Length: 145
Image (cartoon, rainbow, N blue to C red; front, side, top):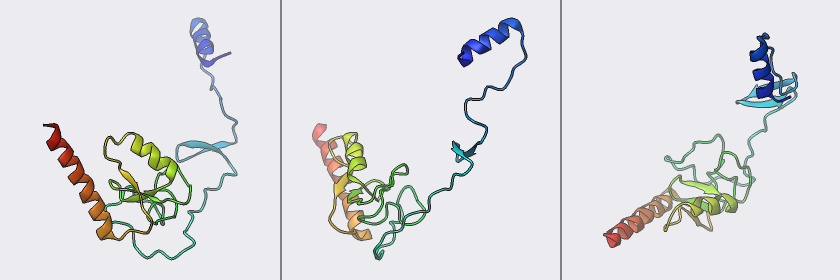
């Protein structure tokens, strides 16, 4: 019997409410998600190479470790743990895997937010890419008027 049918039946017959268990009792909450009691959070992955450039000071979101901060490392998207992040997001200053970069660019309009790069960018190069993006957008707006 579904929860709504059970509820309407109890309300009609004035039965006291009983807990409606949808998950086994051995499940617990971890960061808002139901997980088994033997759940162990994963340790953050570290890159297998030396990190020469620290994360950009304006990088978003600010993950623990090197997630999204290293070319070829782990994707910056919170829900993704793919490695080989070779796309740089000019808005968040983070590196993304190909799948997430394509998904982001699908909704970014005429000027892609994520661009493919071939090395770990310095802070000056990151700022230059962001500046170029803003200049492209400003030029585009001026032509539309």
